[in-house]
Amino acid sequence: MPSVFKKLYPFLKPYKLKFFWAAVSLVFTSVATLSLGQGLRVLVDLGFSNEETPEVNSTFTLDISAYTNYEKLAIAIAFLGAIGILIALGTFVRHYLVSWLGERISSDLRVEVYKHIIHMEPSYFEETSAGDIQSRILTDTTLLQTIVGSSFSIFLRNFLIFVLGIIWLFVTNPKLTSIVLVSVPLVVFPILIFGRKVRKLSKETQDKLAGIGSQVNESLFNIRTVQAFHQESYEKSKFNRFVEIAFNVSAYRILYRSFMIVIVITLVLAGISFMIWAGGIDVIEGRISSGELIAFSFYAIMVASSLGSVSEVIGELQRAAGATERLIELLQLEPKINSPINSKTIRVSSSTENPYSIKFSDVLFHYPSRPDRVTLDQLSLEIPAGKVTALVGPSGAGKSTIFDLIYRFHDPQSGSIQIGNVTIKDFSLEYLRSTLGLVPQEPNLFSGTVSENIRYGKLDASDDEVKAAAEASFSLDFINDLPSGFDSQLGENGVRLSGGQKQRLAIARAILKNPKILLLDEATSSLDSESEMFIQQALKELTKNRTTLMIAHRLSTVINADLIHVIENGKLVGSGTHDELLKANELYQKLARLQLFR
Ligand code: ATP
Image 1 (cartoon, rainbow, N blue to C red):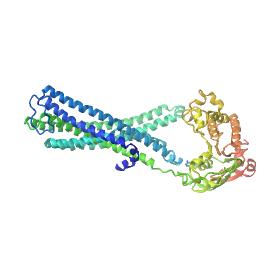
Image 2: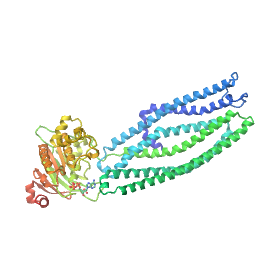
Image 3: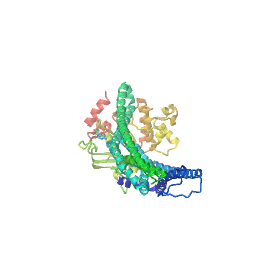
Image 4: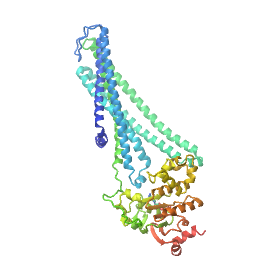
């Protein structure tokens, strides 16, 4: 556990002063709570007694013999009241500061983890599920927050009360203290035994709850499929099963906990009864005052209950340590794809020059998850600057992978990729990606408004620029038909739009970004013939004097490309214009036969 705190230290450091005051108020309230026992003693001995205070070895001696019993009672009550006010004030400061620290630190950690994780390369997210990361960022930080914000202070407070209480007990009455101390292990033992089981069961409950969560997620995400196949009852019974399993584990845990509580209460009461019996005899025989016995019992109960709380929160602290480890693990991840220390940029000498050509030289690549299957096999190809180049080939040939490598979502195992004669590894990732604009196969939209989604291409674009981009992508008509135009909410991943509309927004986004190199992946696959014609016109404008690399299954969309590369099994099997390939390339002829001349 200490190593966890060491790793957490950078997050705690900025708030040192707050921690200091939280600690001060914590010690203060603990000591004040303990002094309540003294208040009780004074109250009983001085307030309720008709007789003179017996001469016993008391820690407090107040010379109030001149006062009447009523006045003595008032003094004792005032003493208790003053302590009560001090405890209340101290508790306010402690509660506020400690809870504030819990919230602040978990928020900082959340931001730090997110900041870190968003730079990880896409292959990381193929290995680690988004759900897992989400749960770490939300649940683990929340757990940490409750721990820093309450459990840890409960632990410290009770630990202090326990230690100070025991010391006080010993100083005042060693005989009675030994009775208390004998019962301590008797109480701790069942707590340890049952506590372990309860802890195991509560972890199991968390796991089962996570199961319920993923079941809800999956079925709601696929709600159309569920309803289309009319499988609501199946999903309901599946869900019910998950809930029942979680309930059964919880019920089992509650049973154990109830047993634990009963045993602890019985033992504590037995110990305290025995102590009061022994103490009572001492009072009868005049060895101690009744106030002292009351105060002693008060301390004994405090010590016993603080022990109970400590052993309970120790389990929680262990859980927090586990959660922190999981978060720290995320913070220690190093992205495999980074910007170089000294990065380069492409120099443009004149405004008419377009240096943004792309060149693949002997690129060998396999996806990290499939090391045995070569996806790009010593691929060499050139994409001339300022021209439209198309990639064609059967499904799975590796066309989208070529895009991924240009973006450096993955790095090839060998070979090099250059833009404008500079290896892309020499660019900073920010510069590289700022030169590229992508219209992906499946447009990803965010759950914001139409204009927010278009603006993703250029955050500081003016409203007019957004409108112009919408117009150029032939989106203006359907946007104006939406209930609030550009301010219409799109729903998660743009569920409120048709496939073609989503693609047009993705094109608008790319138009707004105005990149040096445009990558179009099946950009027009979901459009009807009329919109496709419009889009083709828009793209013609957009691709003018711009390096464009386009993937298209349908040859009709690439007939006019300046250059076509035919890819098969990660290799380049032919290059040329449509007419050249139609004459000379077997695979292209086959694709053309299937698609163009049906
Ligand atoms: P399509 O035209 O159907 O989109 P494509 O030519 O673009 O196909 P790619 O998506 O580049 O093909 O895929 C090439 C090969 O790599 C396929 O066999 C595919 O299964 C595999 N592949 C693609 N993405 C991954 C990934 N993230 N992890 C492992 N294998 C992958």
